[in-house]
Length: 545
Image (cartoon, rainbow, N blue to C red):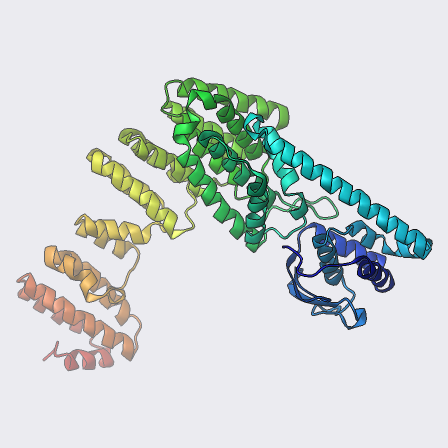
């Protein structure tokens, strides 16, 4: 955010004195921690001497700081004023104006130990040093920009850090992404098409890292989650990174770009293995780059074997994330066609933790893309016990891969049914739907009977295909439900039972088995002759004369 109003030297001195006067050391330390972790999610300057901010704490707190009347400043947190939220907002305000936040943090010692002239000299010296450093950084940034086409990927990331240094205390949200990329583009020269593609990909990857690397609290605890606004920004940026990787498939395999391709894969591998975030952003991009850039190329198998060795060496040296490591190794073995080894890697993960379904579905997606239908059927069976299908979308996707496999490989049909049954109840809706789609009326009915389903749970149109194609299959469904409602032994239950008996009468008539119906209803009435209310309902329904 570019400051709307200036903060001159006198105003700055006054702010330092006000901080020293009104904030305690504990509040200053806590406010600095909030500022450092990007808890100030929004800051505006509605007028020259008013600062408004929203700070993320136990809730979202709204801060208003009056720089001309400090005592009238307020925060809607339980403390109300001179709190850590207010101090974090003041630090953000100072940082926007390129003022030293450390001067505010040390405001008490600065204002208490030095005479006004000495303080003024100290401020001036600090400003001059800051201005000098900013000028040197800008000059270096511009100088290196001219050499971007010659620099390595590692040097690019160092350049990105310099270009975005002034934004690093900003809240990690969509605005941060836009501001960081704009800061990089501002100094980027015109580049050859392939170099430009790699450069922009790494610019997005750099910003993604700044979004997703978790902060630590004061005790050193590493958070394993992202705030909602940060996760939203990261997910959006991740989609753009995936688009760039896909668009670069041609450039990545050109001989002139071999060094940058290798450096990019090295970068993705390093970030993937170091990532502690539960969303595994870099693992996704690492797998995508291998799949879309190298697999299928003449030397793809050789390159993937080299990469497998590197991953094994990395495991020995650093003991990185077992999930990312084993998923990556399973992917490489899959790309090589070594499915048994791939499954071995996945089972090793499953012994310790659940494998996110998106990665398992990713293996299926690859095999569908290369149209390896026998392998796809084998994989669908193999991953069935590994799936943790908590989302309906995951169940649907899994089923769609079975549809693809069975369409090309009809003999895989029985394996599909076995797999869907093994995943019940997660696949119940889908299982029933497929049984009806394929005309397996008896199997559908057996399933409903085993689940004690009620015919009244279904619309007439739902049962119409069975009634048309195999009406006899419905007989036990209605008979079971009638007995269940009679056992309720109340008037509502008897009324419902009669309603179902009327449907049964129509079915027997459709099947031209009226004599069987007459024998059944007489035996039914006789068996329940002591239930007077039921007998009344049977007569009302004209089932008894």
